[in-house]
Length: 245
Length: 187
Image (cartoon, rainbow over all chains, first blue to last red; front, top):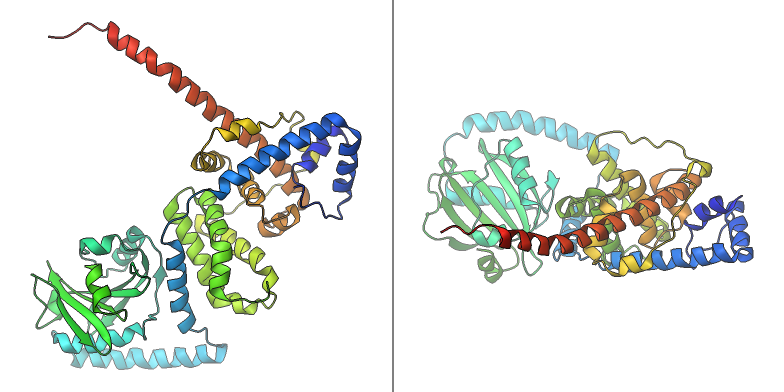
């Protein structure tokens, strides 16, 4: 090993992390002890490394990242991974539902009453843990995914544009495509927004102001804007819900 | 770490994972996605990892794989020997780092070729030995050493370039004013 090779090895080491069984490292450390110039070079290098590490440690973190990660966990946790046998059973059930669903859609045409719509979509939230097709805190990525899926995507209220998203999904309800976007609220709870074309509802909510309700243990707000109708639901209470809008 | 409690793991590792992700992805939104996706995978698969002490390496490895996967192109890792590294390594410049903000240091790291950036950031996060870095990036130890060495050289060059740019801006400003003063007035 020459001096340059010793320098290359030393660059990979930290003073508090010298435990090694690598002969090259041991050789480089012996080299340092016998060469004052190399020792001085290594000390300067360590000082440089320490300062860079200190700066890196101060790179600011996004304020909502931790909350978003923990909210995602909540969803993942309540949606356990089934074993292979369960996958097979689920696939069989899915095939059955597809066939059954075809017939249901034939017999279930026309718009839904708002109460029926609520009663259909709220259970999809699976007690605050919906299955999401894609996860991202980025609104643009959520919008891009929904667009790619030809799922409805209207205009969010100003208060909601500032909330980080957890992810999204699309459903077919009564022959209509429904988008679902999950948000992390300021207090840390989840808010779920369903978006559907207004034509899917026989009595869509009004355009002027959100209609607040309590449905099946959910605090909800419903409104229409343009061609779309929106249903926002949370289990964090009506005050938290109003805070989103 | 004995317990694999999710919240503890998030609190312990998400800052470092995010900073690693930010250095790779070079923008905040993608870095958040990568970090969130990594913990999402942990939430569904982490229970298979019985040895909690391996959580750290598992998370960094997963994040790096997710990044590579998101790039949708194969990474080539040519084997590098110690002897291939530049012969003249410059003296380190600790004082140069003092003049920079943390965000500028991150930007300098982001400007470095990805081949060198990943081991360099893992090294500076101070959580991994070079042996662990080799495991996370799935490259030989000798390659980690040579990339760290070259990476530091490139980082020092990036700092020098920034400093030169800053100096040039300081010099250019009065010159611009002088030129403006020399312009004929209109009206």
